[in-house]
Amino acid sequence: MIWTNHIARRKPRGASARLVARASVAFKAAAVVFAVCLPFLAAGHSQAQQSPPGATHPSAAAAAAAGQIADFFSEVGDQIYDDCIFELSQEQIEVQQALIVAYIKAGASAAMARKLAVKQIHPPKLSAKCEAIRRLPKQPGWTASLAPTEEPEAPPPPVIPKAPAKVAPGPPISIASKRTLPQWDCAPGVDYVTIQLNGYPRKLTGGEICNPFEDVIHEVPATAGAFRLGYTIRTGRLFVISNDPRSNGQTIAWAISGREMCRNNPDPDCLATRAVGPLPPGEYAFGSNDPSKRITWGPKTKRNVVGIYLRKLWDKDKFTPRQTAAILARGNIAIHERLKGEMSEACLGLEPKGWAYVASLVKAGRATGINAYINEPYPQVAENPPIVVASSFSLTSLFK
Image 1 (cartoon, rainbow, N blue to C red):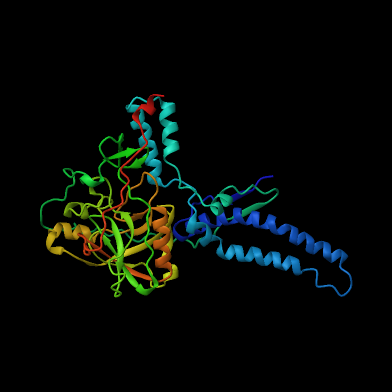
Image 2: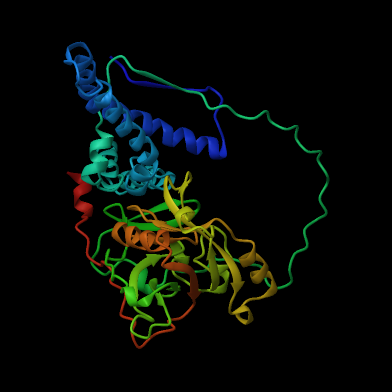
């Protein structure tokens, strides 16, 4: 009585890998749908044996059940991956492992350190629907074989020596001397431990970064029509840019951008540092012209993302030629949900409710792009960031 997935030994790549990930969950979920529909199929078969003359064709119930299964498969990917995150992200795994080391250095036993790290770093709380999918019982007697066909690999292109890259003039880029901006540092009296992640220090209290944003949203009224999103790098505010004066500048949510000492830090060296600095200032477009295709599965983040790309860099007068070249070379920028313990690699990391709402605006075509500003362009309507400064974490818990 085992439900198994037989995946081809050769690991698929790119789109095939995403299909495998989705199909694996879909087959598992479909097993339960089949179990639910099985009584209908059985009822249809029974009617075939016992139906009196003139009765409705006995396959009607079976056809209805088959239709339910077909409908499920047509929507299962979007339904599951819109709302459900079952695993830790790679960053969360690294944070969890680094926490164990930090707790042991702080005096905790190895067992206590592991227990705390596992308790603190975990996937987000699931909705009732996602919890039901995650806890699907294994179905008896069913084996799903999934071996996606891949096109033969083309021979590798000939290796052509590249000319040495030209280095843009200007002083070298370095963030070694940068410090976390005071508003993002741990509040006085809050216990924390410092982990090392990718060579940079990160303070965590109870497994969470210091001073995260509260998960608050402000719905955009229908009168705003189609609008662009605005983002203030220095404060993390996400807002409306609309021709409707009643909505223009209105806050939608709050998002972290950048990590460690470069979190929401518009310092030019931070903006020019890949995988650490925040979203550079400028005009951004979504990755697809079709709103229904703007939300895609990000295998690295293990969640849905809205891909964006820089169309026009602003504030060039603030950057050296070397910084400008480095900023323009950055990529893989997106909007997505931020999980506990994570920060951001130039992306906009929203809290769960904030992400769900912003994603709905993008998918509905109401949000048409995004502008990023170094400083607040609408100070008359902008409020202070709703940060969480308190923490229940205590270092004394390490010694219990």
